[in-house]
Structures are given as structure tokens and as C-alpha cells.
Image (tube, rainbow, N blue to C red; front, side):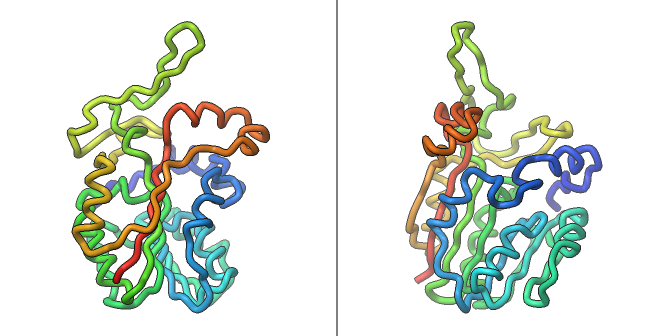
Length: 243
């Protein structure tokens, strides 16, 4: 079973104060890049894996999806998502992505934001998602960029002359990474970009687009703190489809 860190009171309190949780999708700098990768939603059945507070689930329903099912391991997340949603076509379920089995050919779109790096067996998950999508179904997901999460202590190193360096270590050694983020010992699973893409290819997905997210000049103008994100990619965005 996956680590359920989001139901840790200390973690959940800190996480809830992130701009993307206070302001929703517009508080996520990568949201416009994600929208550019999404298909037309009209008439599609959508699964939102790691739905959190349900921001994306509700947005997809408002933008044409005929139904959305959001899955999350955290009771705290699902409770909040249900409280904030007034739409019978949006349903939320508590589920562990390490063991989740979706019905075959039941969705036209599977979406996930910053969740799959918590999943130990990515190959099993990808195979399951392929079965759950209809022919021509679409998968769009984001994860922490492998460069961002590979270091045991992911934080900037300042060389003393106002230059920041992001530590990258053990990049080719895949597996568990534990970091302290709102709580101690948050468990994630590092995979290289090659492993991530080849797992999709090996499970008969065709890759449509890969983005290593960086903020735009306009975003940096409005939020100068984002400028440091140009030094290394924090997120990897991928779109793929079944044949």
C-alpha cells in the first residue's frame, strides 16, 4: 500500500496552504501548459488519478466532460473534494493507485497531476491505464521532473556569488527517495526520463508530447520568484494515446 502522507495532520495543514490549493488551477504555473496538451473534453468520460481537492475534476466537467471520477488515497482530500463539488456527474473515490483496477475501456481520458511519482510499480499502473482507456483514448499526466527529485536533499545550493545550483545525484539509480516536505520521510519513487517514456511505449502508448515545464517571461514578470525555475525543470508533462 502506498504511503498516505496526505492524511498526516502536519503535512495536510502545510499542503493546504500552497498557492495551487488556495487558488486552484490558476495557482499552478504549469496549468496553461497542461491545458495545451488536453484534448477537447466534450462528451468524454474522464478519470482523474490523484484528484486531490477536485480542482481539475470540476474544471473538466465544466468544460464538456460527460462524467469525471476522481481517485485519491487521502480521506482528507476526498472529503474536501466532495464538499466543494455540487455535480452528480463528478464522483470521488478513495483508492490506492498501487492497486487500483479500472474497468476496461471505461474512459476516453485519464488525467493525473503530480501523483505518479508516489507509485512504486509504474509499469503495472501504465498497463492498467491502457486497458481502462478506449481505443484512441488519451493519457495526460504530470510528475515531478526526475532531475528535481533525484537528490536526497532537493534544495538549492548557493555558491556564494549569487549563483544557484540544483544537486543531481544517483540519477541512474532508480527507486525510493525520502524527503522532508511539510513532514519527515515523504516517500517518492525516482525514475529516469528514459524509463518513464519507455514504460509508456512498452505498454503500447504512442507519445504525443513531452514538456519540461519552465515559466514564461510573463509569469516571471508577474511573479519574480518563478525565475529560479529556469535553472532546472521542476515538472515533466506528458501526453500520449492508445491506438
